[in-house]
Image 1 (cartoon, each protein chain N blue to C red):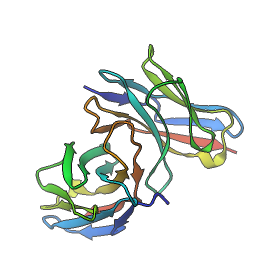
Image 2: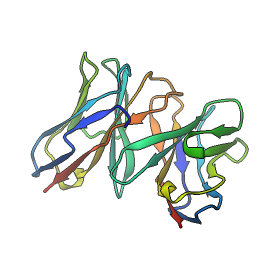
Image 3: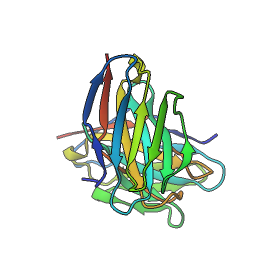
Image 4: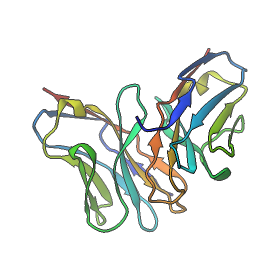
Length: 113
Length: 114
């Protein structure tokens, strides 16, 4: 069965420092991977996706993610964190059939000024 | 603003009642998805429609049903409500139904069952 794991409930980082939010997945076949962000009292916003091709995917707001097939990971990264990046981040995978999206439990990112 | 609208924003009702949540997708999007977000269950996929047809079902209870109308808006009907149904319900849309389509989420409807 397909699954997504976000091993950290919360990540704390100082403003200006690089950040990483971790995600590992389990799917049969080629994975279709997504990152979304949720700000307080808002819906989720799409950040980036990996479908095929280059393992380093660039997305919105300076975020990028690195797909690693051997480690079945898709970690979200940003070179320099901003206080405004503080939010809840979700990793997601489309299942083999392609119709269901399975979300991780979410990781709360807290960026301290 | 994602372009996806949901009404109402908040809904307070009693156990045993029935409610309807409404979603209008982004202009041109044919797929509509419904999700339930709660503290204990996280974000759970409920159901997907594509151009009026049910495409996929997730963890949707028998008491819940949905449909997508010819104008592509969708409604999620929740009946015989229980306290545990209190949650944030999101609608999302995408242009297609394929694996590569990212979803655009509405602001959600917060349902409180008393």
